[in-house]
Image (cartoon, rainbow, N blue to C red):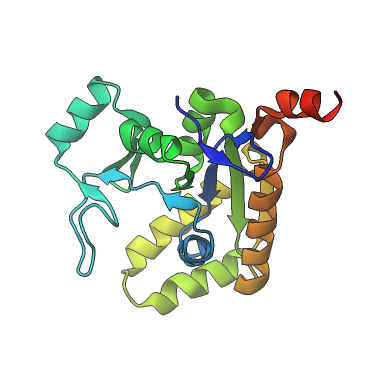
Length: 216
C-alpha cells in the first residue's frame, strides 16, 4: 500500500496514519471527527460505501458512496474493500482505492468504523493503523443522548443500546481509549494522540539517512 509523501524541513518523509475512531452511536464520535477534520489539514476522511438509502441532507461521495446490494457484493467479491461490515440490516465498507490515493497524496486518513472494521483494517495495514475508542460517560447518559435526538423509535434506540454494550466489550482491541464526558477535552485528547503518532520514529522514512548525514 502506498504511504504518505509528507516531508518535514529535514528532508525525510513521514508515513501516513490510518486513524480509526470508534464508539457506540451517540457517544459523540461524529462531532469529534468533524472538528478534527476542520482543524487538521493533513487529515482526510475515508468515505464508506453503504447499501442504506440516502438521508435528507446527505451528499453522494461526501457522506457515503451509496450503492445497491448487488454492487456491494461485487465489490466484496473483487476485493475492493479494506474492511466491511453488516450493521443494522445494511452493509458498510471502506473502498481500498480511495484510501491508497489519499495516502499517495500525502494525507492521513480518518476512519469512522466499528470494532469489526477496525480489526479488519489492522489485519491488513498493521503498523499504519492507530485505533481510538470513545466511551460515553455512562450507558444512562448514552441512552439520554439517543433519546434526545428525537429521530429514532423506541425499538431502534433499544437496538442501538444493545449494540453499544457489544461494542464497548471490544474496547481492549484499541490502542487508546477516551471518555467523552466533555467534548472539547475529548477532542484535545484525540489531537494529542494523532500528533504523537505522527512523530513516531517508525513513521519517519529516511530517518537513518538523515542521522548518517548528521553524524558525518
